[in-house]
Every structure is written in C-alpha cells, then in structure tokens.
Length: 143
Image (cartoon, rainbow, N blue to C red):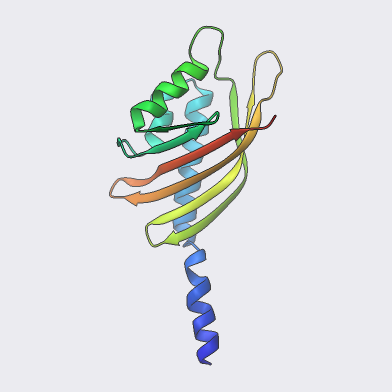
C-alpha cells in the first residue's frame, strides 16, 4: 500500500487539472489567432512581460519580453518578410508543479508563396494572477 501511495504521489504532478490544460491551450489558440490577424501585440500577451523572459530561436538566446518582440518584428514584419498563417499541433502539456507547466509541440507557417516553414517548440508556462504566461520559449525550425 505504501508503495502504491508513493507511486501516485510521484506521478500526480505530471498531470494538470483539465481546467489548467484548457487555459494553456486557450493562450496558444489566442496567440495563433492573433498571429493570423497580424496582431503581434496581442500575440505577445501570451508571454510574460518581463526582462526575465527567455527566448531561444534561430540558434540565438535572448532575454526579455522586448527582445522577443523585436525578434518577431525583425523576422516577420520587416521588409521582405511576412507573418503567414500559423498553426500549432501535436501539443503535449505536462505539469511541473501547481503553477507551472511544460508544453511541447510543432508549429507551421503557411506563407503566401506556398512555402511552409515549420519546426518544434518547447515552452514553460507559469500561472500569474492574470493567467498562464510563457516564461521560456525554445523554438527551432526544421532544416
């Protein structure tokens, strides 16, 4: 009996309450919708607005909400770039504790020229008083 209880206690933190998982999925859905409406400011509300946000993309590490916004502006809003249509799929959401979660999945952009850049991402979410926010984003593109 003691072993069963220990096993349950060790495994339980891996599962989020359904409401928490739904709220995290809602953040990601909101981000995709904002992106697809070319609303980068709304997209960024899914991120923790802090200089401590960490963002890894394109082989580079940056820190801070503003740095993440600047990356997206340079990569998708500057001359010769576009935002395209964003889709997230293959989501796996796991609890790291009562107020944090790990999310992994795939992203895909569909561009006006028919190209479809895509890749993988891992996110760490933290629950704040105003909801779940991404505190770490590591996104990579397929080659």
